[in-house]
Amino acid sequence: MTTDREQIEFDVLFVGGGPANLAGAIHLMQLAKRENLNLEVALIEKGAEVGSHALSGAVLNPIALKELMSGYREAGCPIEKDVRGETLCFLTETSHYSLPLVPKYMRNKGFHIISLSRFVRWLAAVAEDLGVNVFPGFAGKEVLYGPDDKTVIGIRTGDKGVGKDGKPKSNFEPGVDITAKVTVLGEGAKGALLREMATKLNIFAGKVPQTFETGIKEVIQLPEKNYFGDSAVNNIHTLGYPLGLVTHGGGFIYEMKDNRLALGLLVGLGYQDPMLDLYEEFMRFKRHPFVRHIIAEGRVMEQGARVTGNGGYYTMPRLAVDGAVFVGASASMLNAPALKGIHTSMKSGMLAAEAILEAFSKGSFTQEVLARYHDLFENSWLKKELYVGRNFAQAVSRKGPVKFVHLGVQYLTGGRGLFDRMSIEKDSETLRPLKHGDLEASGKKYGSKDYDDVLFVDKLTGVYLSKTQHREDQPCHLIVHDLDLCVNECFETYQSPCTRFCPGNVYEIELEEKTREKKLKLNPSNCLHCKTCEIKDPYGNITWTCPEGGDGPSYAVL
Ligand SMILES: Cc1cc2nc3c(=O)[nH]c(=O)nc-3n(C[C@H](O)[C@H](O)[C@H](O)COP(=O)(O)OP(=O)(O)OC[C@H]3O[C@@H](n4cnc5c(N)ncnc54)[C@H](O)[C@@H]3O)c2cc1C
Image (tube, rainbow, N blue to C red; front, side):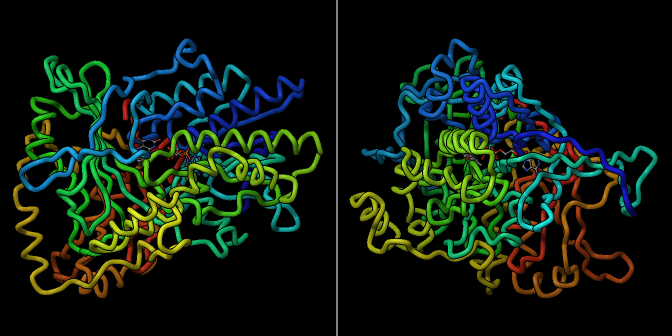
């Protein structure tokens, strides 16, 4: 079928409404105004609104924000709380111990606790005031290339109103071809367009494989009299229980305004146990006596999940190709030891903006010219910050006490450690096959499902609280390439881990009533867009694609 598509032309197109692209777009407009240059700039976001899909801890190191807008408080930047004190706790099954020393990179005093969702909404309003055309509800579905088949010339947005059978319905709206001299890809971790470009343009050649963590997060409404009222500490990180020391990850609890708190658990996706259930680990974290005490008498207001790429410096792609640059988490700009990617993403967007402005002054948008972004990055505080964490993900992926030896030596040697450019396994390759006793052990571990629908909610209520919606009659955006593999080899070897690593209950194994044969049931409407399935599936059998623009979660305070 050939479709007539509207074509819209801009000078610069930002794909993704996260902190990286919004800071980039704002900075570009500021610089262009200073140079008296009139640029037509657009930003598209797949969420129904900018902020609908934004989920983060989120402690903001304000360094990049100060550079972008020194008077950000006066300009109305929505800050929940300032960090007034912090603690790093080691949790055993029943107790907690505050560690006497918080590593430098985890010291947050003076930083801001924000809701990323609210923060990016505010940045989007600033960008619009500066003249950026912000289009929420539009998912970039395909990269457009020039006649040479390698210069990026823009993005095609997804069609709307296509039925499950792939045929247009009466309300069909074809996607739009948005062309630009420069396309800035800021899709966040595990971008679908980035995946396509990586295959075509080989931008990750020679790089260490990217690794990820999945975070499940809630905002909880507390009673007026609560833990934080008397506490000098409002920024808590935890290690140990429930994950132990083999699986990488940890918890966080941050005070928000209006007697609310943000709480979450991040789990490194390099875990080995095929029976590990991400959602139930999060519940175990919440049920720990130390955490339970802090959240006592609370009510879950919102829940969501998202992956973050923690691979760091050695996993960064080539930052520029002909006609396009990569920013933020798409370009692996996360300080993994500190688990902070907001300020680093913002700075990467701002550096990209500076390079783009120079490209306009030269009238050329080739890879060589846009590679100025790479030079600016190499000479920035951002590079210094990321370089210190260059072997961190590799170290924490090691099992047993050797992990701490690596971390200790890295801490003392500015990140170099015992071996520089350490290797790491891909997250899809770390699961071990099911062994005798696994099912019983998991039954015991996850047995006590004491949900109360208020403070401890089950997975489906969690999806409800993420306000996730997808139009039902559309082609499934989760492509499972081989359904037989799921119910045969994957079930026998790993007991269908997708049913446990997906925090949205998208994947279920059912028994056909008549034949009693196993069948994979997909609930794509529940998808939280976290992308864990594409990363952790041991056979690479799942591909996540963007559903219709505007679908997905509707986060307001996460
Ligand atoms: C649980 C958790 C806790 C974290 N805690 C912290 C913290 O405390 N402090 C900190 O600094 N960092 C933290 N981070 C990391 C931080 O949130 C990210 O590094 C940062 O948000 C990355 O910014 P970004 O703009 O690159 O991408 P994102 O914030 O992911 O934004 C990308 C946007 O692009 C949109 N998009 C994606 N694909 C498309 C497409 N094809 N078309 C249109 N739109 C698209 C998405 O919907 C999204 O809105 C945390 C992350 C997680 C998951």
